[in-house]
Image (cartoon, rainbow, N blue to C red; front, side):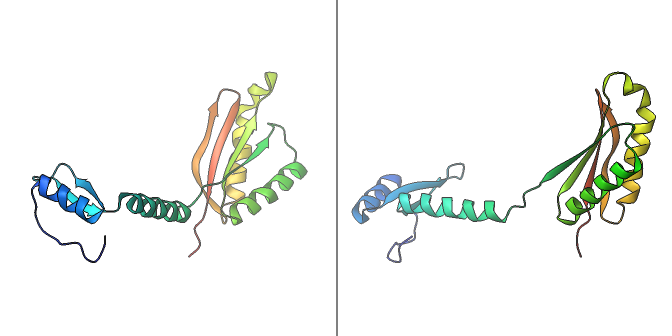
Length: 152
């Protein structure tokens, strides 16, 4: 809005003629109000500033990164420790963790082993993150989500 714009209530025709006179646009701000609220502004500048504000808001929004770690139902201790270190690193960096056990073929009979594995992981990572979703079987995958603990 320019500094020389007069504030006031005008009938629509008078507002339109004033906007034309100033070389600006008459923009409806609140159509549901009675009477509708309009402003005399440079519409292109208004759009530009609105896009700029949206861009700043988008930049401030936090982006959630989800890292995945895959286990088998019979993952041995060495592999488990190796993957647990990666999970710790992901949680320290502030990423969410999606840990899952993938059951191939007939290994689905070891559902309990998969759940025990995921619960063990959750317990080992307790100081770095909290369980957002307990282990849940979805088809041939048992999935669990762990969110990083917020830093105070």
